[in-house]
Image (tube, rainbow, N blue to C red; front, top):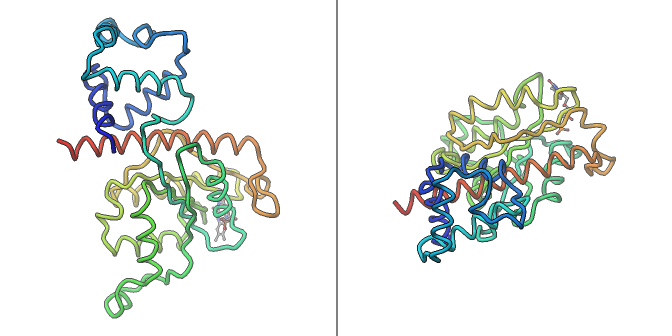
Length: 279
Ligand code: FNR
């Protein structure tokens, strides 16, 4: 990750702005797009001293700040994404349904197709993971299917959980998979893991109950959950065609918008982590 990324984080601190990943992401979401005919220092959202700082550093061509100020300017003029300087954002979308024609697996594939520029999405399922049994674990260790899923999660920048809803709650199959994963090395695999949560159901409330039911578990696991927006696909049977393609244009737009916000969150979180490592 480039050194400029650290300094983008620093710039927010210098401007007296909150510089947590969430704060940087929400600042960008709130203030862009900044029209091309308005200089960054003249943007209406700065207070006097912030505007002066930017104007002064820009005029002086300050070697310490100029590049990062220009990158902030560029980021604010884009409608999506955080910064061109951000590396690729690899997401693992994990479907919580084993069903061949699962709406949630279809939703994961729709996300893959609609991923914004700079984001790539791989789709994984929980096939092959047995029911958790402490005796199996003691005797044979962690099953290969769990270890292989663990590797996929570790090699991605972020995890996107795509959850069905069963009886207003979390499906046992999905919870079982996460429970197995937590037995491998909970801290490495989940602690601080940048995570999104979306889902599709046939009912009218589109997994709102199961997404809510996931929260205590995700808190326990210590993931860094994206909560900037949500995606609840209700009456999924009307949104996908017979081949499992997402055909509902409104949901397509909502999914694109969710992914853009998620990408911003991933990049901002990476920035913060890089800064922590630097300190
Ligand atoms: C359901 N379904 C369901 N839907 C919903 O909106 N709220 C609910 O509480 C439930 N409860 C429920 C319980 C059980 C045991 C099953 C099998 C199903 C319907 C569910 O949304 C539908 O089966 C989806 O198709 C499941 O997701 P996949 O498999 O298509 O991804």
